[in-house]
Image (cartoon, rainbow, N blue to C red; front, side, top):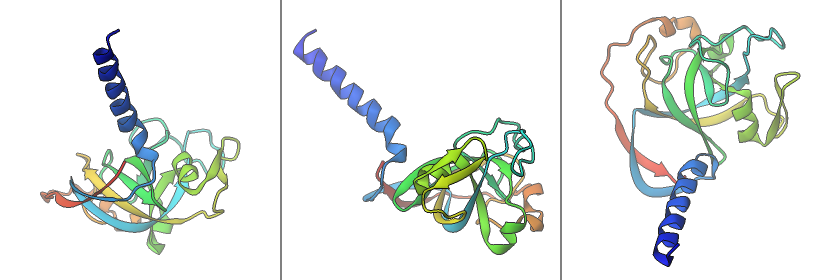
Length: 187
């Protein structure tokens, strides 16, 4: 292989690695802007509903998608809404695949992260036996920044999250939401 082809191959490999590994890296403000639909902060808990019936498992997620890393439950956002959360400099992507948290949303806990993402953010370990998170910060709730990059097409409210008890999860939001420019985190 010529030196020129090796250089192109190495640059391509570096670019692919940067694109695929950047989602879990620590982040800093780059000064570059990105277009987002919404951003804010909330308290997040965690869940894992794989239809096993263990540890409070309520069954398959509302979206019909299997439980997986990156799935969150929202009390009001449309299913299949996409975005990311940031906790202590760690950025993790998500999509809304379930409804919840229920009653905790009346107390300001507006996002239920999947247990594997929660463990990675907090430095813990997802326990497949208990469906809980061991170690890490020891917290069952964390304060996160959320960024919505794409709204789902279904029912739900396209705004800052509201309590499950409002019923916003069942109403079709017909508002046209414009994206805004924000400073883009690295990664």
